[in-house]
Image 1 (cartoon, rainbow, N blue to C red):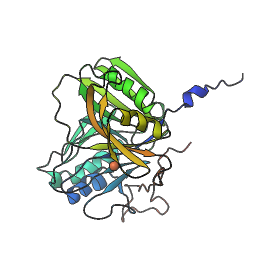
Image 2 (image 1 turned 120 degrees about the horizontal axis):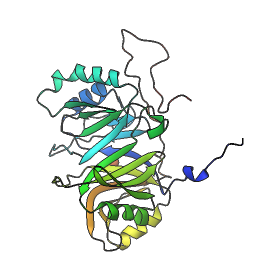
Image 3 (image 1 turned 45 degrees about the vertical axis):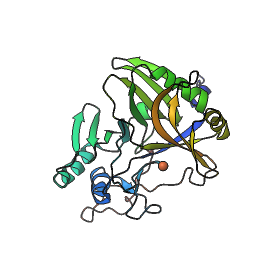
Image 4 (image 1 turned 30 degrees about the vertical axis):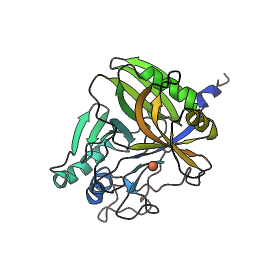
Length: 294
Ligand SMILES: [Fe+2]
């Protein structure tokens, strides 16, 4: 029988990649211990190699961590999902750094299907093993970021991304309540989950995305006074997510929006194999690939 294909499954909206999450940290050494040694991720060797910032590679994605006065950590209100090759190897690495992170907010919470790892400053990283059905062929990467949002905002947030950014979105309702799901790349999503828990004030952390139609959303936001920064030809930013009909502010989250013509788009990133040591070294296995072998 002839195989049936569904081309619409491959449609992508205007947002073609979620690249990084940016959370300031007060101490680069502790960040190195946690993100590089503990999580097993790789520091970008090419850019931001000083003591005032660190870019951490996660497959084709990154976490950016500037350190600058007043040295106040930024904490995302929700969690960042990370796919890593081996849960067991992750737990061993985290155990090895645990004592040196004593006195910080570092924590490891094992659950069925994932491990929640809390950074020294309280950021929650939900670590999954690769899951072809759920995440596609990601071996190491950032498939979604989930934000806690106030009750009654998920529908307006989903409409904002559809109308202002031209990103496909939907509202899902499950046992935990309503959640807006926005497609921001190939098998990449932003999730906005309603909660009745009190939320901390927005502290300035940001995310970075690439969009194909760069001027359309810019025009929409500019006409409504919502552009907060014009940073050269290839980047602009906004903070307020609003109801597209009433312009009522729903949530604050700075978006660093880049064009796909930005020279940084799809830059190759190095990912080391954290299992390699000087003791067990195997030639040829220094790197791991962002995607699983087919
Ligand atoms: Fe950024």
